[in-house]
Length: 504
Image (cartoon, rainbow, N blue to C red; front, side, top):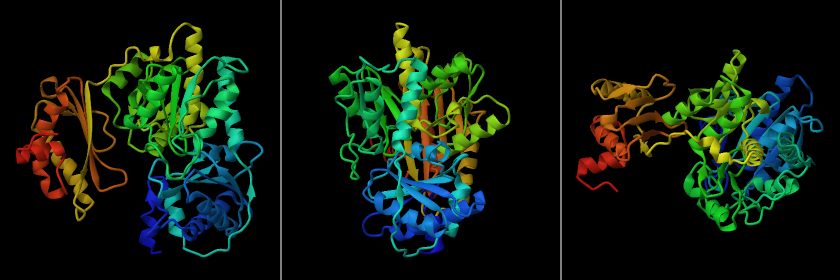
């Protein structure tokens, strides 16, 4: 495989690509090259002749073959790999820090919520998840090879991880079976997180009847396993209401992201999940900083302030958010939480590990504590002002548009904003351009940025007024006319305005 094709597999701090069918690039041969490259980096980093590396996978059909080939590559580099079988992404980090596993590094074979024909890799050391530079170095070194399949020790990590989660609930609640009498429904999305219902919740005394998609299945039957989107939580919401459950918990395929459903069937995701997590942590960390991605609401900022916390928006991308939290923490600031609206969450108390399942467990313990005091977990959200309207558009750029045009688009937008007295740049810009919109023009904000992974502009809009998004869209039509030469197609509202068509 050509060098450019290897480098094209990088997706932020992950590797992702097609793993099945015609045109597959993540084959056992390429996985062996990736394993060997990461193995050589691990030998250099640790100074050990034979460092130990754990290799796990999610439920995808391509997972077993890619995990085996990755282990073969690690062995060729001089490492001592062991397979953990079906695993969640956070549990692979546990293999690096939990006594009894002794891994110097770990590799997770997963593509998160992407379609079943995709797969990928995430890397860990005892210091945490590896970032962009490590992924780039792995791909720079990787070369396609044909290796003989080897035999490797199998040491499942999920039992130890389940035990850690059980102990978290017991520590905060103080009982051996603190969930006795509770009914909790889990939607594991046919991924690796189905064990949570049996090995965590049931062991703590909960009734998990009515749970969905607990058995791993590479084809992901049912819905897309992406808890960021409310439409993917609809089936779980119906299950909670239909069974009279106290709570619903949804995970993505590799269980590093989560969302909750309350007893009334309401979604606790995105801004609401962030607010809930912050409210639970606030008493322990007065004045602490909560780092989020860039598309969080203005109402969330106000809510965090009322909790005695400071809201720090940063770039999209879970690793960007976590790295910023680590940077601030190392600089001496108190940072209890780093969390993205996608459901990726990292807590200071959990070594800033990206682990939505840990957060869900922490919130579960808080729910029991709230009920003991005669309240509900959702009462912690009182005072959270939520937008009346919000929208997101993904706007394709022309394939031949040079990378420097991204800066040109933002320059033109800044000029456009400067010509409109109802618009003003937000003070906390870390990517793209976030713009505050006066009440008479929409009463909210919008953010235009480039997608992390695709030649696409992403436009987020949020308003405090029921018709505010439409007002902002109308205002932005002329701007998208100005940059039409750089776009493959305008956003739907701008196209409708130009052609006279009615907006759908």
